[in-house]
Image (tube, rainbow, N blue to C red):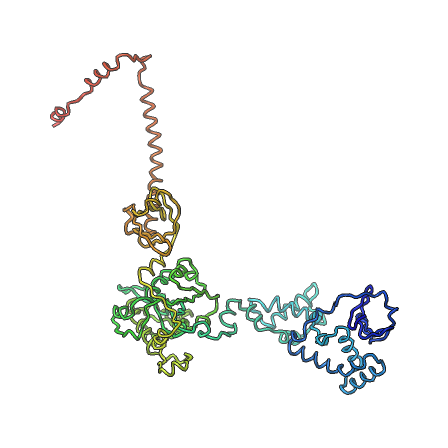
Length: 603
């Protein structure tokens, strides 16, 4: 027998600690007893077995607290291990350790037995609680009442939940309160002891509200994923102002969509329109790559190139889960090399740059537009002023104001939260978004992509499946042609086609990133949008359907007239078929008319 070897016989398992020619020292691995000597003959039927205790974790894999406790317990028994074979000295050593450390000898026995059985310090680590503390009947009722009546979106108070618990659990069949019953203070104590704020917010206010208003904000900020310019954050908001048209009639509140660079805070582009969705995004992207000097000049604003030096697309666009951002149409922008990142819902801190932009912009024009259609926070309250009656600005007027605010935001607002590097401080970069952007353009890793306007617009057009046939390329039930695709017309097949919903006069075949134009064959639809074409076709169907009923009646009347004629015709018996030519000539002479004379007689 070898030292530390495990032996088994039936359900009994022992571990050999020391051995000589006639006997060995062993410890019972099942029964908590101290080691003792035994003759080899007494255990002749035991056979070696596998180390069933090897499943214990390594001491280095334990958490720091458990590892600390394990080594403290091992220290207690370390001085006893040299005397393990001598019962008298072992008992004396255990007594000394127990007395010195004010621990019971039974505890030392337990630690010593665990170590000898498992032969590893990790066996002395405290065992994790596998089952929770058993709840009393009253505590079970408390937990039931809290889950049913308090942690719900009904918003019941703690006192209401307590009352409902008494009604359900502590009343007889007649509804009379039965003694004994717990007090409200016991109920409140249990609630406070087990209260978890996350559970409180989610159960009473809902997960969406928790994600938006209560969730811990633990992000490291924008710089964690935007080390340089080129990460554009997109979002849209409905402006807090009512606008009118040129005739002075109320139109409503405009939609402002913006792209803000996460690194510098520069507004790369904007879209101010009455339409949202993909349309506003298309307009936004067109504004992002536009020459900002010319853009401002069209609105009567003069700026320098350095104040708004952005005419390229960010290489990464960060959006939320809005339907316009996750649509296949917008995601086609990836064809230009742009990466689209969709954030999870209700995570505004992950696109804080654009959220801050909206707050600052509306805060800039708010003081000057009060009484001119600007909406105050109390507009939903009863008796509040109707701010629609104050509206006086048109979309053109408001866009000039927005542009002025954006120019200020980019080139004059102090960006005091930007984490300056030593190199930027050495170069004297001013704390304005435009200056930080211009500096980023000169650095390695600037993530901007130059794109021309036609390519951008074609990329963002909606796409569908077109079909080649001998009749041309059929797209949205309309036929198109391009003389360079004769072979495709003959072989047929499907293809990806980009189309303009506002004008069906032309579509573009998408092949390997290139766009081949096809012109409309049915010229009656030139210049019309897809909705107009659909209306025309629906009107045509309605007209045909209405005429079909009259046509059926006409066919019935025709059949009736023909039947009358055929039935009144005089039958001559068997028709003579000889002399057909002579008969034909005689009939021609009888029915021939001289139209010159007939015309003269009619005058």
